[in-house]
Image 1 (cartoon, rainbow, N blue to C red):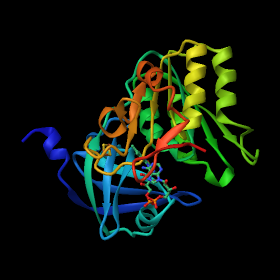
Image 2: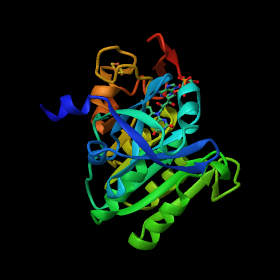
Image 3: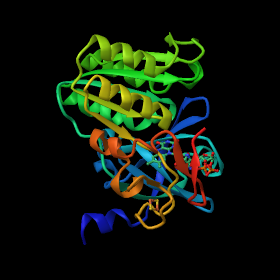
Length: 274
Ligand SMILES: Cc1cc2nc3c(=O)[nH]c(=O)nc-3n(C[C@H](O)[C@H](O)[C@H](O)COP(=O)(O)OP(=O)(O)OC[C@H]3O[C@@H](n4cnc5c(N)ncnc54)[C@H](O)[C@@H]3O)c2cc1C
Ligand code: FES
């Protein structure tokens, strides 16, 4: 049986550990051999028994212990964040394209829960000797994610970190994109990596074009099947579940008319992003 067939089978796993990361955000840890092989940016379909199955990015794979980091926004994420150690969940995946390491100087920008897949990426960049600057944007201090682990990576590998908050309650007051623009204008980077809300990705993509830095971005769309069948995750000519979620500059250029402007709703209809 091939890897692709195997990773599409649901595996039932036991929650090993739950960590509170921030207001309404928890990391759920479990052991699963296939998920531990996930590359940064890949996602799992997580089945919460009796509720729903939802896409979640892998946020860490340290020593075979896998985590997803979940922000409560609706029924399924609420149910998952209320599950205790020892509870059972179903896992399919890992699915999708992933961030590829290129060059020796990386700028990584995360907005809100978008920082979840970037934690795994930053770990890999640093282990590969890439000098990395991470700009993490949040609305307010209580929504900053992974501070302890990022500080460990700073101490061990020299990760540079800039936190931004919209209300100035922590780090630099303002938007992560504004700080990113300042850094791009002052320093040379070989790659720009990003994950967050689509309007943020759009802004960063335009900056990456202006400063001629190749970009890779992870996009989020409503997903139902995660197998390229239902069409709920379409953006331009791509399906995020099969062709993404990570897209490079060439692909982002092709979908610039939709990027950050339109999405599909739960009925698959194209609607403006507010
Ligand atoms: C590839 C991928 C990776 C993701 N990684 C993570 C992650 O690491 N951590 C995390 O917390 N969330 C992640 N998400 C988003 C997560 O899947 C949704 O928040 C979840 O499906 C919402 O389910 P719900 O039943 O709690 O909310 P619902 O009741 O279904 O929806 C509540 C609100 O969330 C919006 N929403 C629902 N589904 C999605 C979706 N797939 N994408 C964006 N908005 C959605 C709805 O429009 C609605 O406004 C990811 C999504 C994708 C496509
Ligand atoms: S989620 Fe069904 S086509 Fe992508």
